[in-house]
Length: 265
Image 1: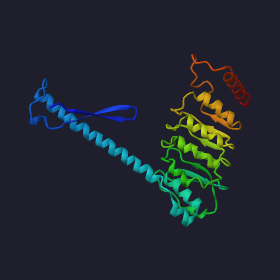
Image 2: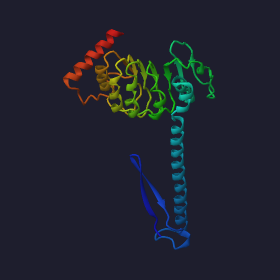
Image 3: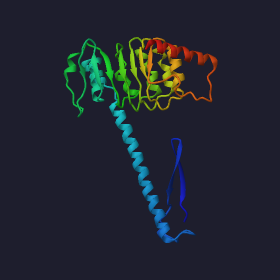
Image 4: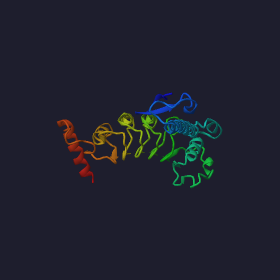
């Protein structure tokens, strides 16, 4: 009895899951296959099915963890105020922050434990936040958007930060001055285009964004809409192939920007 093939999509590729309709041992072996080969194929079918189930379970578990970590701390906000709620969210994500007018940073230790002294700053807003290498996502921003005086935000190496996340940063357009997006694997050009709202931005790190094509051209365009922002981590020539020449206007713009950078240094 031949095995049926079930094709299932996995992102951009295909995986093939072989499912036996009945045990090979209960009937004659398929033509051209020995008894040993038939049993081996059955063994592979069963094992691959187990692997598929394990991968699916692992994916669901990861999604549940991300959702749980980014839940909205509404109760904490009602009981202690929005500043304490934001502080607690950041620390629970193993991030760090600094209150306005304070030099001390609050951050958890290597085991995720932290001091609760931040509850004494109920009326003090946050000025800087470091959420590097955390699982913050679009939903988690619900705990940050109340901080309209936030000046610095680091999202370095955050695997869940995507274009939708960046499109929501416009709430900080009147305060945000420094933004670190380096090593974020899900960010594309579409998300970076949404940063034009951040008119007060003075420093932007775009190092190692694997899904951004032609990063040099992206830097030029961002500097056009954010003329006072210094963009780091990207060279003007990066991603521009020699065989694809720039049009005269773009080439002249790149030359002017390079000249400005030279004078600045």
